[in-house]
Length: 304
Length: 149
Image (cartoon, rainbow over the protein chains, first blue to last red):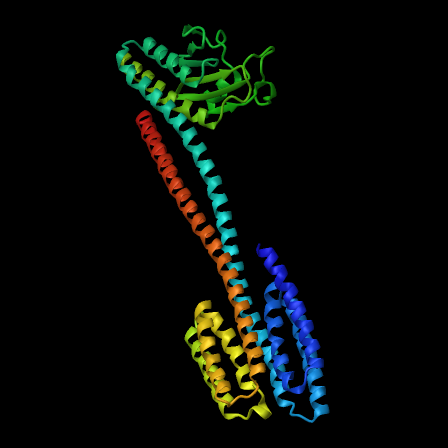
């Protein structure tokens, strides 16, 4: 409907201008100024239906009509001042309308700019929301692990012997990590080692052997010696520690168990899948090592 | 518009001057040039007033000049009629343009206000999520403290 109306207006403006031109040429001098004044309509209307460029063309047409009237006035020996005033009027009307349209355009552009910047901000917030949802999800899972670890920690009091405490801790923490993984605790005592192990099938194995008889790996020794944690994403690609032939374990994390400033052992979690562990798992294993260290420390105190 | 008052005063001054000059200047030499000044006033008024008000004011002002025509001060009434028609046509164009602009402005305003509400809701949601995340991290920190103490 609006398009039809604009189209109609365009036709009216063009027909009006042609008619006004014809009138300037044909009508007597009493009508010259009235007809010239009529050119203000196409100047104003064309600005809105065609645009600024077209309006300038209609202004030029009005000026041409003005020049024709000047020539006719000269021939008729009448005053030129009213004609010149009328022509100046065209320019003033054109400038005023242009000014108003520019203000409106500026307003529209600034609002659209504001909208675009709001859309940018909204998109950035959506990304932030997505990141926060993921962070909350992962932190909730982390918190759940810490809660479970807390329960394990509180349950320690119900066990009396050192062996039962250690078995209890390892059996429960491996379920926090995941079922298909294995956790090993190697405790060094007077040059001998106790190995306690838990996995998805057998909950516990324990033994007291010398260093050679145990499955003490290069990275275990490195952790004991340097008292630093280690994360190995894939044993098959590992260059620092040589794996055994037919190595089953691909991912390993290993942390020292420190009691009274001395390395009392190492705690190791391994999986047959590569890239299973991350820094967070290492930090979590560090906490398990803290709990284990407390158990060992309590046992040492009892023995003394 | 910041200088609305000034525009109004200037427009009314032009109309008053136009009417006065139409009365005093001889029509034979100056035709209806003073009446043509009304078109500037009409354009200026359309910037600051509602379409209906502009139309009423201009018709009243034109009525004064038409009164001179009926009173015999202005003789060329046919031309006066055509010129009045042109002024009304120009005002009509300005009114249409203004209405079109206001429609666009209103639609943009409503989009902006909707987007602002949407943004506020999202920011509120972000605040909640941030607080929840912070609380969880605090709880984790507390749990860690228990283990390492």
